[in-house]
Amino acid sequence: MRRTMLTLLGAVFAFGILTASYATAELPATASVDVQQDVTAR
Image (tube, rainbow, N blue to C red):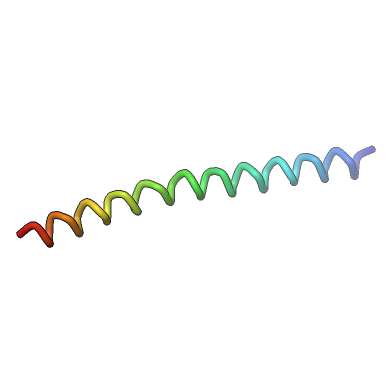
């Protein structure tokens, strides 16, 4: 029973880490595109 709960908790934790890293990775990508457009506009 304890192993099952730890496995489920680890899976939820890993999913949360992946979701958080994906969410934070979206912001610099759009910011770098904006900077690149500003540089090419000049």
